[in-house]
Image 1: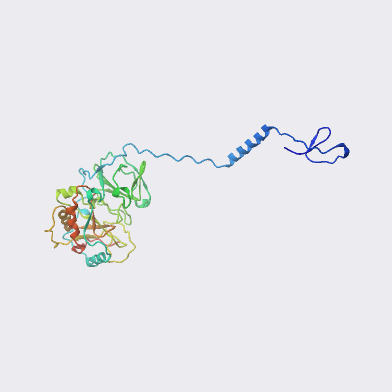
Image 2: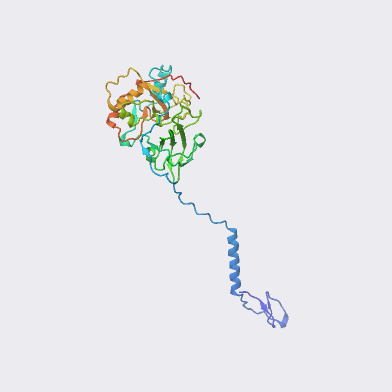
Length: 358
C-alpha cells in the first residue's frame, strides 16, 4: 500500500504538492495486482537459485567385489609342486659350519642390555589365535586391486590373487595385520602389511611379490611386508614341517632394538641407532653346537634342531627372541613351552660373508 495525493480529476501523484485552492491532499490506497508480487518473488527465487552452488552428488554406494574375489583361500594349504626358493637360497642354507661373527659377543650383549624377554619364545600357537596366517590359492584365483596407503613407492603393484576373505594376522584388529598367500600353480608369494579388506579391493601399507623359483632380492633400501625387506612366509614354523619331523630353513625372529643397517638377504632397516653393536636387520644367529638337546622332545625338538642347522634371521622390531610361526590350531602349546627355557645366551651370531649396509 502507498500513500499519495490526487487532484480533482482523479490523477494520482506520489507526493504532496501544494496547489492552492484547486487541489487538496488526500490519503488514498493504491492496490498493486497480487500477481505482480508473486512474479517478483519468483524472480528473486530464481536469482538465488542461480547463485547457489550445485548440490553435491550422492556418495557412491559400496562397490561389489569382482567375481571370484570372495572366499578365504585354503589356510595352511598345500604348496603343490612349489619349493620355497631354490636349495641354494639364503633361507635354505645350512650355516652350522660357518664361522661365528667376530662381533657376536657384542651383539648378544646389546640384546641383553635392551632388557625385556631374554629367552626363546614361540610367537604362535594358542589354538591358532597366535601366529601369522597364510593361504594357498590356485593359479585361477581372481586378482584383487591393492590400494597402498603408506609405502607404495617401495611396493610391488597389484592386483594380487588374494581373496577378500583371506585371514588377517590378529584378526584384523590392529598390529601388523599381515596377509600372506602362495599361488601354488605359479609358485608366487604375495604378502601385505597392515591389510584391510574393502568392498572391492585391499588397502595395505605395503606389499611385496616374490618368485619362489628365484633368489632375487628386493632393491636395496626397499621394505616389504616385513621391516627388513624380507619375505615372511619362508621363515615361519609350519605345522606340516613339524609333522614331518624336520624344518629345512632358517626361522624369522624379532628383537626390540635394531641398528640403522642391514645385511643381505635383508634390504631395509627400521631404526635410527648407529651403534655398531646393535644387531642390524638380516643378522643371522644359530643355536650353539654344544647346546644339549637331550632334555627336549616333540615339536620343540624339531624347532631347536633347525635352529642349530639353519639358524634364524632378524626380520622385524618386536619382542626379543620371539620366533614366528603360522597360525595353526594343531600346534601343542604345552610342548612349545619348552622353548621358554632356552636362553638367548645359547645362541651365537654367524658370519655369512655379507657386509653391513647402511
